[in-house]
Image 1 (tube, rainbow over the protein chains, first blue to last red):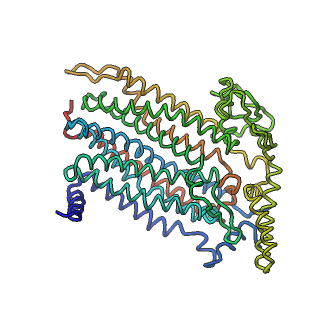
Image 2: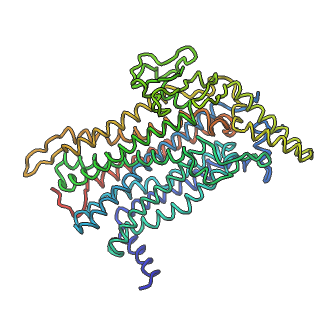
Image 3: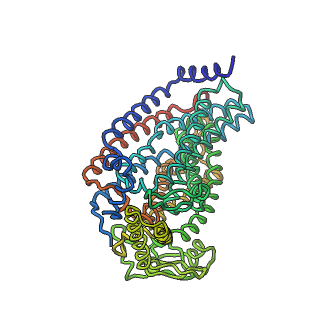
Length: 69
Length: 524
């Protein structure tokens, strides 16, 4: 058996024989969905990207810090 | 003076949200780091003895490691979201510095960790004993390397080195990766944090093993796990004491205000005693301008001077000394707050002139002069936004009590490990009742205490550096985004619900796994 086949079987058999692991993977999937889809998209936009023109981020920050008018 | 139009309630909510997320994230990290070593030791014992008992013992602790690992994974990413939304000025100014360590963390450590985790869980009958053992240790090493890079980023905020401010891009740019990665603060923080995580892991192992003894289940497994946990915990605790001393020394050099707040030291001097306990009102900032020290103080003579300077008679500045300026041990003067504000305003004015001149197409020579002025005064940039003396004094009661919880807890765990090594609780044999039940109960109680102590360490580190998001360069009210407090408050409570739910799920799964006990080991 070559190395790639061995690696494939390691993961394939490992995932198939999981018991508690199935629950944990389900929790991870739900958590990742909440973090990356719900929280990221709905609640955590990039403030500077939303408020500054592209390429003018430095000016935007400078104005915020009263460095520029 | 620079007047920023910032909603101060938004600053507080943004800080609270960050603290909530970090505290939650830190519930998982130390157990991952601690159990990583324990399961490595157990599997090494299996590798050396070939006994099935140690294999099942290793598998059991790996299962608990896996639950904790799965529940904690990706919880730290939320902190990065908060940087971009709530702390956009900060995030923009430090983006270049943070990018490198976080990228290295993501690429090297995370992938290394995930690969070997798979071999550790799936590879028992598929790879050789030696390769499996190496994978188990490398899983732990990967987690520890991850922690290294995150702590490097945190340490840079506490002690910004290896960087220069670029007035064109308005960013701190890295000039020396090695200086950032190996700064004395980063090294101290890494060693102290990882050792504290090992202690927490050991307390967890001792506590869980004691539970089996109390329940008279899996007695051989419980006795042997308890012994391994206690010896490992004691060694880690003794090393932790040494690293704690070194950390205090580094804090004294780089963040003297934090040390003064930790100690409730308002007027410093030579031959300073270390406070064991004092009567500081936990709900009110003490009057450090009028008092010299905290009331009802019980202290160890000369110990603070030794802790801070490695010299029994060394000089330790208090809060007022730092505000008024003082002379360091080596004879160099430390500027007063007034002088630092002046330097900060010089940096801001020079930066304003630079950016205006650049737009107006001024001569390069003039721009170079302004750049020099900016660089000279940049270490004090944040002071240009400071209005009052109280602005730069952290909330002393939290620093003071959290420090005592941390140190007191550390001493308590040494006692726990010593008891468990010298005279562990005995599980009853042949239906005789177990002896030393109080020791088992004590070990169990120590599990939640270890989490409180571990979080207290972070409270000391993070409350102590207030108001700075980057030490001396960026106060919180400048680093924050110009958001309304309502938006941040909403996500704060959203997180609170989410985190509490996830925590309840984890505790439930973990308790079930513990109740089920190790497989393949006699339940007696």
